[in-house]
Length: 117
Image: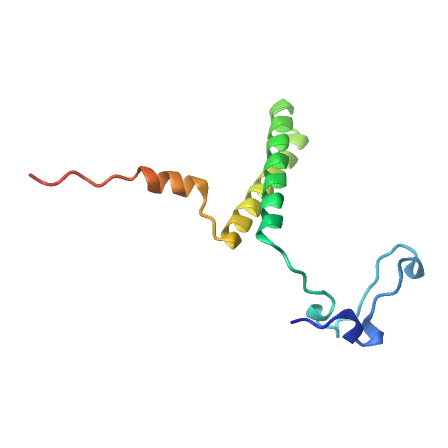
């Protein structure tokens, strides 16, 4: 379990947004990264909602890519974006313990060979 922010030493707490001018702070290398993040609880329903959102986003990016000129910068950016979204979807499904739909389809259609005569 990670410590709460109140348990962090005062020397490593990030200043308020207005104090640095742009909202970004630099923390020294002596602070372990696990001290900077709070633990959060995530339910499987939240992941399902995220998968739904990512699927819709991927579909929209594919529709936009269909209308982009082939070989254009937009086409290459959308190709990388779609690939990244598909990778995120696969990782989330793996973490949930869901099998890939393509793997289910292949496993479901596999038939045994007929018996030898």
